[in-house]
Amino acid sequence: MLRFLLYMFFAWLLYKLVFEFIIPVYRSTKAVRKQMNDIQQHMRQQYEEQQSAQQGYNYNQQQSSQGQASKPPKRDDYIDFEEVK
Image 1 (cartoon, rainbow, N blue to C red):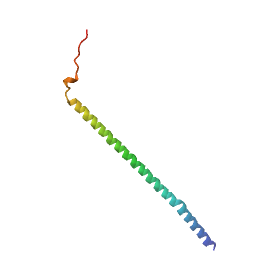
Image 2 (cartoon, helix red, strand yellow):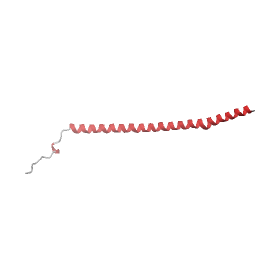
Image 3 (tube, rainbow, N blue to C red):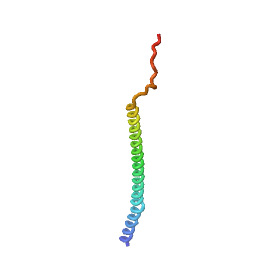
């Protein structure tokens, strides 16, 4: 009878360990990992958007500077200098 009670005690202890400690720790670890992956994905997406916007800005700057450099200046843009005595 004592042996049966001892087995029941260890079975109960094992049950408590599995269902009140191991499974909750597993679930919380899984949830934290998912949240971290979501945050990393969000940050990566923001970084890529920022890089593409920066590259677009640099491309537009290069195009505008090339467009201005290739056009000859108009004669109307300059004012003749007159020397004052």
